[in-house]
Length: 123
Image (cartoon, rainbow, N blue to C red; front, side):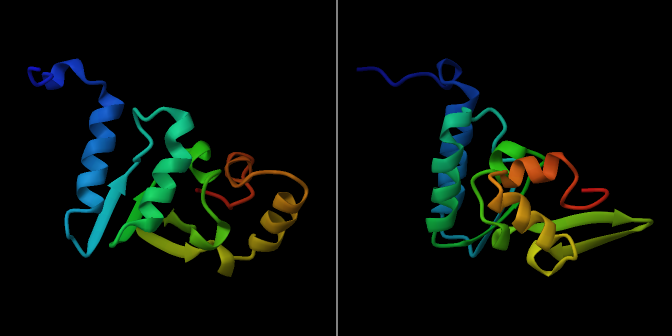
């Protein structure tokens, strides 16, 4: 059997292969910018699980409420621009955390909390 040309492989498959290589390539830290791009939505939970289980520290940035639906509030840091500065805050240490916990307890998801503005202004 001849090797399949990369041009015959979907962007999502190529992205997942690249992420897997990064996660298991021996780096001490891996930073992923919007890893959900081109990835089938049904694979997001598997992707998040792979990032959790990887033998490296993983830093992820996203604007995706769908990706947020697969992480725990304790895993979320908020990055907010304030003037010329960028502030990073752990969600569990913000004043919004109680409203988010209540929203989740009532059946909402973390992605919905972000989308509705419960995670704060500018996020």
